Structures are given as C-alpha cells and as structure tokens.
Image (cartoon, rainbow, N blue to C red):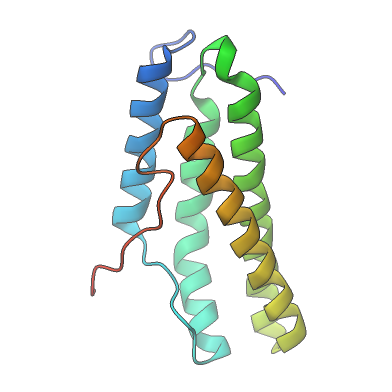
Length: 139
C-alpha cells in the first residue's frame, strides 16, 4: 500500500509523525464518546451513527500522513487494525438495526480485539493519545 503524502508533503520524521498522529487522535477523542455498556439496540445505533463518520474521517487523515521509511511496516499494521475496527463497527450498526444479538456480540468482540491491537501498535510507535482509550467526558 502506498500512503499519500501528508500535510506539507514528503516523509515526516518519526517525531513529527507521532505528533501529527496523536493530534488526529486527540481531535477524534474530543468529538466522540466511548461506548459504555449499551442497554439497547437503539443506544448502539446512536453511538455507532455518531461515532463511525468521525472515526472514518480520522482514519483517512492518519492514512494521509507519510511516516518515515523505517516506520512504514509498523504504521501499515497499525492502520490495518484500525480498518478492522471500522469494519466491525459498521457490522455492529447493521446487526443492531436487525436486532440480531449474536451478530452484535460478534461485531463488538471483533471491534474490541482490533481496538486492542491498534492501541498496542500505536503505543509501540511511541504515540500516547492514539494508544489510549478515549475517556468519557460526561457529556
């Protein structure tokens, strides 16, 4: 996969890549709420419909950043985990629309596993924000 050039063009240094990626993750965390234990299919739908577009937009921004050559494989693996999260959340929304509990459970489990992989990969790259859960803000 060839990543498109990030803002300013050309490869970023490791430090600049980490800084910009964490900025994207900070903006995502500021715009969304983590899902807590949902009490209904409607709660899943509300969360998914509010969160997925913001997640997809953040992922697109992250994919445009051009990491240093030495980080390409690690960044590719990290973003692949995030794409798994995105697919699982899409599946979660569809399953909640169908009121299909087994599929909701499966999609939620896949999202959690991929999210864990993503956070681990981000932390390994040196990111502090992308490697953490978003904290509930009480909104």
